[in-house]
Length: 254
Image (cartoon, rainbow, N blue to C red):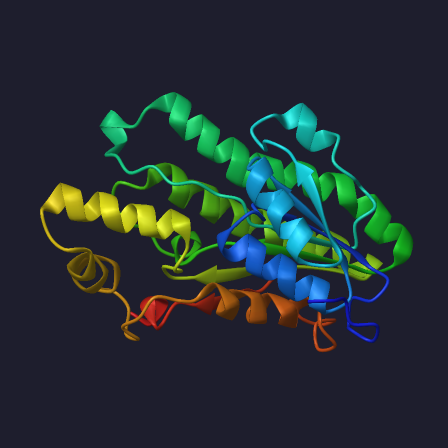
């Protein structure tokens, strides 16, 4: 899909983390279609380079976000930052590996902070910028056995609001998209793991475990997340800041 010369992001540069697959790849494609030059960041060199070859306007940037020195060296001249990269680990708190906990917070909270810190001066100089954080219903609600993920997403929601307050005088907005379970490789692995653990089929995992708190009984598709993210950089975005828009099928309506 080629860049659109009259798209809302024409002439702007975007950076998307976790862009090799899932939500990140779909968001990167959507932003390129909207005219942006997209820096697609991922540690998966094969995946992110394949995306760049497939889509005009996307440039592959190989980076492991757990390497904070490498994060600090990523490009700073960015107009739209999408903090999307994440990972999951399921364990009771008293058995949770502290090193795993630290890694998840490093990738999902500290890296977004460092990236935001890096790109905000450019946004302030331009008088325009958009920070879009791909959060989760777990940034608004907790689930057992996911202490690191829930902590990181709650922290990301708070960081997003602070940036919204600081960025407002400079034309910069900061928001979260907070979906329920999205059909991504991360979630598909969880489905397989849960099926093996409980000795049930994968369809039962989706229906009886993942969708129990959800009123709309279906997984969210990645393109739905991309569509909502596009609202945050589109023509109606100037007064949307400090928000967390749920895409959770009614989970948080309970």
